[in-house]
Length: 93
Image 1: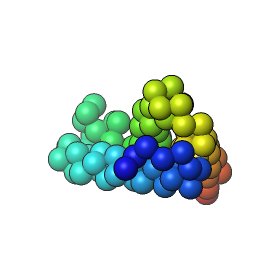
Image 2: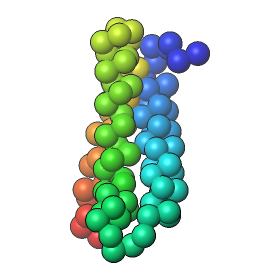
Image 3: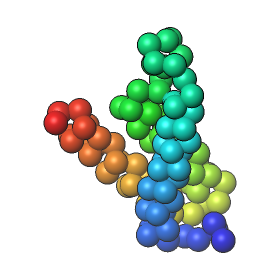
Image 4: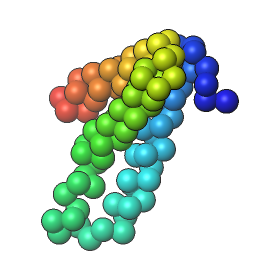
């Protein structure tokens, strides 16, 4: 099911996977006390960047292991778009 060589499929993976990982980090962050050293990685802007970093795994899998260039490009494109939107809209507004 995950072995498709399609840019649209890569875009979907590149958007859904960070969203799921952000939700996971958000739930963990709810259990961490505010003001402690453990709460620092669970600030919202840091969780967003950590969630984007999870896209390194599917990029590696689709480019190196499966040799599916179109799917890897889709994941890379969605990561780039999400990162640019993060820096433009969240950091400056």
